[in-house]
Amino acid sequence: MPPGDIRNCMIALSEDEHLMSRLFRFRFNSKGDLHGHSFGNLFLTALAGVTGDFAEAVRLTSEVLAIKGVIYPSTNSQVALRGQLSDDSWVDGETRIASSGKKIKRICLSPVDARPLDVALEAIAQADVITLGPGSLYTSLIPNLLVSGIPEAVMESRAAKIYVQNIMTQPGETEELSVADHVQALVNHCSGRLLFSKILLNSGIPSRLLLAKYEAEGADFVKIDRDRLAAMRLECMERDLLSDGDVIRHDPVRLADAVYELAKL
Image (cartoon, rainbow, N blue to C red; front, side, top):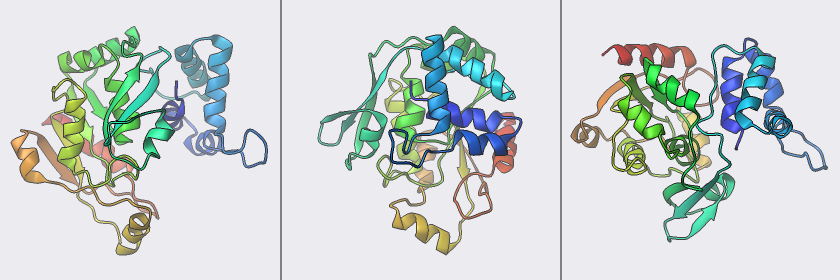
């Protein structure tokens, strides 16, 4: 199982976020085989090898880091991510999909019948709020919704279901995609079902200099096509969610406040 997203969750929930962030995001810089690898990914992978169970490795690592909350992978099955591109060719693996240079038509898991963790289904059933995003649309968000039973659990849950839209497009995955295009991709991968009817959007505008930096790397502001969103009967909330600093990302406090506000509506 790809450990990167789990690692990021652990960093966010760590009691000492600054130290854990530095440690788990540390990448080796050498001429050996470890060059470019993340310490956090290697730690999780090694512990999964020792225990023979990825979910157990996540639990034990969470204890070591004394995180707040509980992290459940959507599945414990050994699966591979496959992507069908605009020319109908298929590519295997997250990195190859994102670096193909072609638009992504759809994503699937191999095998297709990956089983969800029972505790993950229970958490979804008992949740007051379920959020999806921000994150890589095709290689981080959608794969969770491809696990058998997960979409059904979300659909049946009485929780407020909120999709947090990315602020910028992602080179290799979502170039030129609008907010409605992102939502439609989620619907297409959930057998036509709209699981998240509440959409949280950023209304803040970064500086021209910062935008130019991202545009040079192939990323643009995600267009908010309000007419299409209204036609899809989505409940949208726009708030200034930009963090301060030299990167374009959500401010965690502003985002949390907005999630709570939208969940109450």
